[in-house]
Image (cartoon, rainbow, N blue to C red):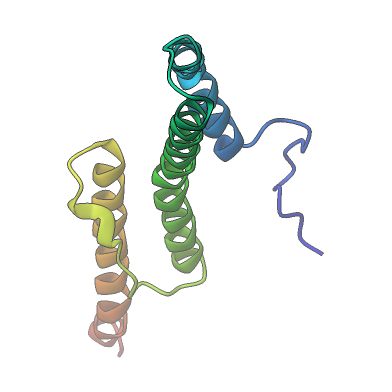
Length: 132
C-alpha cells in the first residue's frame, strides 16, 4: 500500500495549518485591541457584544479564506502533476492566468503538458520514418 506522505514525517504541521495559524495569530493583536476598545467605549453590552461577534466572525472568515487561497492552487498543481505521472497530458491549469509566482508555475506545467502531449502524438510518426 502506498504511503500518502511519500516517506515524510507526519509529526510536522501541514502547510494549510501553518498558513491558518499565521493568519490567525497575525490578526490577533488587532482583534484584541478592537475588543478592548469596544468594551471601554461605553456602548451597551448588547451593542459591544454584537460588534465583537461580528469582528471575530470576519476574522475567522479571513483566516479560512486565506487558507483556501493558498491550499486550493497547490492541490490543483498536485492533481495536474499526478495526471502527468499517469500519462494524461490533456489537463491544463486554469489558474495559469494569475500573474504571481504560482501562476507562472502553472503556465510552465501547462507548457510541459503540451510538449509531452505533442511528443506522444508525434512518436508513432517518427517511428515510421525509421521503419525499413
